[in-house]
Image (cartoon, rainbow over all chains, first blue to last red; front, side, top):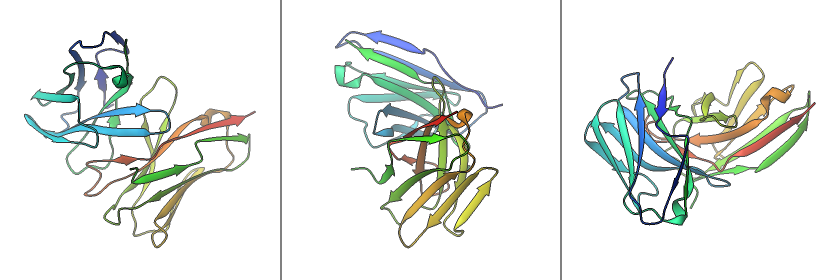
Length: 112
Length: 112
């Protein structure tokens, strides 16, 4: 079974803090994604990586950056957390040119 | 601006009834249309998907109907069961699904 593991289920951070969300997949997938999930807005793509050290901006990259130093690990970084970044964050992976994306369980981040 | 619009936002169906969720898209370059199912506390998981060269795809109680000229597709759940209660997301992508654009989601409740 494909497993995508996000390091935290729940996080509470203060405004202005630097926040790291970690994601690891165990199926040697080339593609990894970070989505943000908000009620009524569905899932919105923040960043996408198709290879180590490669990244592409998604629909809402502002306020976020990413790091992919190893194939299995994809990190989302909030440089200076703000209250409007309170949300559910979902990591996903897929094989190159494969249609199915596999999601982690999500990290619910609250910025106070 | 949402490229994939999903309706309704919430749906209540009696056990044994038919659940219907609709999606409309704008980008004619989309060539892959999956539906994802998400249970509380879990990440979304692929339920069923269709490509635009067919008008319908059925897997068990789940059917996707696709209307290319209208740029619409829908999910039908026949004989709906309480265990189908979940949030459903339609999505669309180009190039074999490497980057998915999601609809806003539909929260389905099936009453026993």
